[in-house]
Length: 264
Image 1: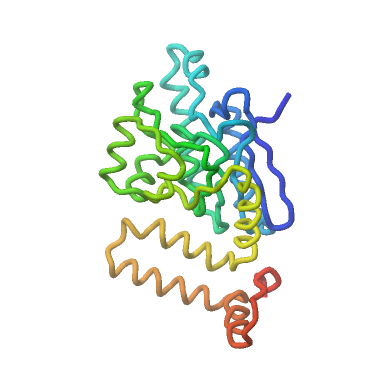
Image 2: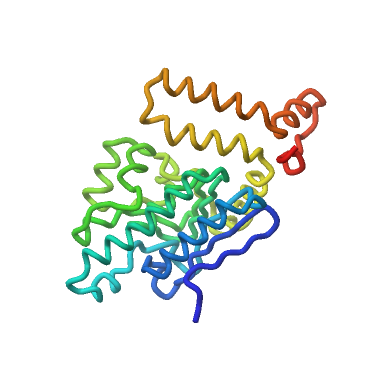
């Protein structure tokens, strides 16, 4: 039986690949559970410095598996409760881990697929890709962090339009409005993925982890509380081998080697 998600670790880079191309990588219970297990492993594996999330086939992710919704019959509320719970734990793990998340969108992303894409720190997409919320089209409200991420990335007015009208957003427009980081030619997606993955895996993962935490907390913090968090974070970062290496490299006018200095 084909695994719904594959996980490969090459050096400091872990790659998670949604692997249900025959169903547009739609999210059912087995895939949601596999995603959570992979997220936990990446979070806990200290050798992993960068996590890449991508997909096989023509689509990145079509969202929830509508056929599985229908098959659940009168148990659909329980089905949704479990599926959303698994996916929400995955997103939380991705958002709270110290490692950066690079999302590589190879094709259309809808519903929860859009949500997974938005969870990335860096999101690159093929120019042929497009994005849509999808929820109201099947009489549902957003989940998997959509209502949290979307207004923060593109503003409340644009978020209202995309959520309420289900309008499809082409990759180039998605880049222009801040929904993704970059839209690239389809045949350049693999090389851009490699370039970003190498750069992120060579970066100071401790400082990145602290930065990710500050950004997640920033929208809910008064100025003085956020300043205090920043002060405590920069003090914590200054104690690390990465910080010592970064300062030495700056003074010596060379590129820092954070890979060796992580545990110094």
